[in-house]
Structure formats: structure tokens, C-alpha cells
Image 1 (cartoon, rainbow, N blue to C red):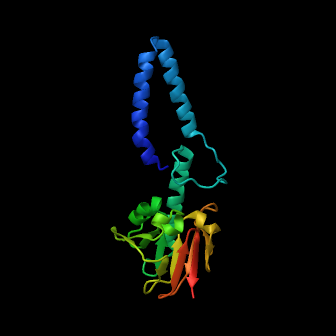
Image 2 (cartoon, helix red, strand yellow):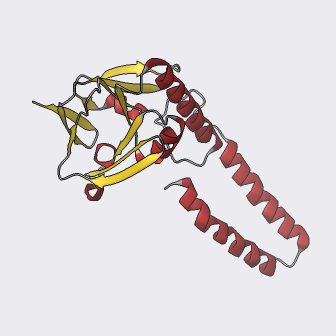
Image 3 (cartoon, rainbow, N blue to C red):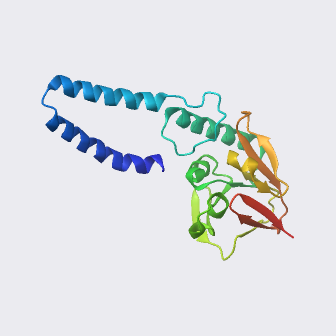
Length: 205
């Protein structure tokens, strides 16, 4: 679950637990020991690096400090790589919904799309598409799982590292500065039509 949603209900939960402990524990010493233990355990869990070698699958919405650092590192690497290697007038970017806003904000010159059917198996959102350029956002549903390449576009770049293991027609894997940060580049031509499904993108002949 997304960290922001967790924070909403955990805040109330922590307050209720604190009130309960303060009423149950009559001894101030016992109360201090309990609270200190809870705080110490939470801090240890937050700062513990479960993957120092960065070999486990990336968790986009984790609340652990190491994953938050990895999140920032991946975003910086990919944003810098896009600016240095792709032109806004012939490239469109595909991102998952959790990071679509960040890419849209930091890469305003580029057309940034979030196609839920490509990143999520939930059929309710299989045809939902979000797009943005110069911070102007659109959200709409398509009648089918198809994407038509706009005029002047020569490349699609899928920004999620997990896409490097997907079935994508003519996809080229590229490392974005960091060897563990992968993106997928797809050479395209205007007017081509791609069919997208969960973790799959195929050229419609």
C-alpha cells in the first residue's frame, strides 16, 4: 500500500495506542521502557537496509529509508539520462502511475504518459490513460487497449526498470547511468499502432 495512505491511519492508531498505554501503565518507569522499546524498534526497522547490494526487486511505495533512497536515486538517474539522450519533440515517455507526477513535473518539455493497463493487472483501469506536457494534464479512457503513435514521434521510453523483463516488440534495454537502473527504448514510426496488455506491448501489424 502507498506510504501516504498508510500515514493517514497510522497517525490515529499511534495516538490511540499512546492513550491506552498511558492509562494502563501506572508506573512511569514501565511506561518509559515500553515507549522507548517501541520507538527503538520502529527506528531500527525504518533505517535497516534490507538490500545493500540492490539486487532484490524494487519496491516503489515502501516506507523504509533504504527504499526511499533508492527511489530518489532511480528518479535522479532516469531524469538526467532522459535529458541527456532524448529530445522532447521526437520522444514520448511511459511511466507507472506512482511516478507519473514526478516525471511530469521534472520533465515538462516531454509528453509523459501513464497507461494503467500496461502496469496494472486490474481490469477496471485497463484502458485508463493519463498524459501531461508543460504541466497540463489529461485523463481519459480509450475504447480499446491500443496506442497510436503521434506525428513526429520516433521513440517511446518506458521508465520503469521492471519493464526490462517484459515482452515488448523491438524493445532496447538501456542502463540509465547506474548499472542497476534500466529503462526500455522502443523505436517507433508515426501512425504505428501498439496493443498493450499487462507487462506486454506488441506492434499491431
